Image (tube, rainbow, N blue to C red; front, side, top):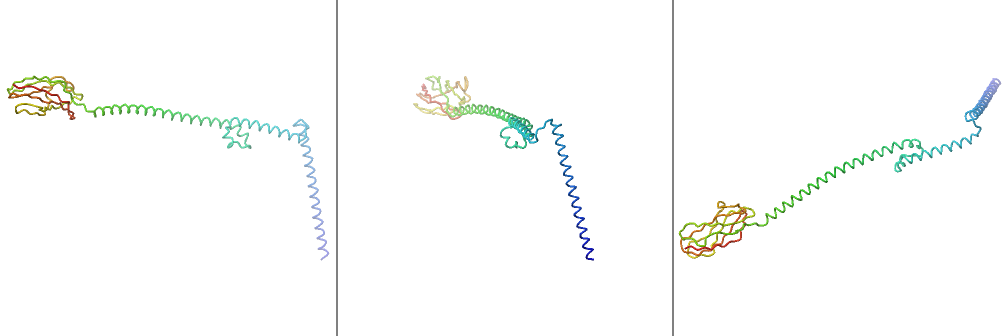
Length: 265
């Protein structure tokens, strides 16, 4: 039994060695076939396709030169179309061909966006100018109105009392107790004279007193801005009288006094 086991092991080892030998032969044959195919391929494309017998290394150098030249032209195109500030973000070296075609699109979009922005700014500026013009016009109008109002207020603040221009009254009147009339001529810037005040300065005899009376119904000619009112005095005894007369307007402004003297006989 031991002899048979040993023979079986020997036979098994010999079979494995034969199998490995066959594999090596097959691999060697395949390698030879591959080498032959590669040689035939190089011969066909080298003579017929390119029509030249330049070495492969020479072709590699020429292709590399052409590629560099093409990339340089592409970069010039991209440099022309893409703004400098966009180039650092949108121009990676590996995307030369892509950005050489996209450069014009980006530029057009940038110009369009800039034009829209400028147009918007111009519209805003026009609206602002229109508003500013209206504001300035309104400001000027208000300034004129304010000046006029201030002028009016100033003018109203300045006292404008009435003025007694003249009095037409007889120097001698009878002492019969009847009212003797005369005319007082006046002017008033505001036209609002309302009363007359009579103050006795001097007199002889007795019973002569002064008073303030309403004159709004005494206008005999003209207007309250420039007109005339009637006045009247009476006496019952021999007297020498001097009175001081003033006019008063609705605001309390008082005219300068006007002295009038007459005799009663």
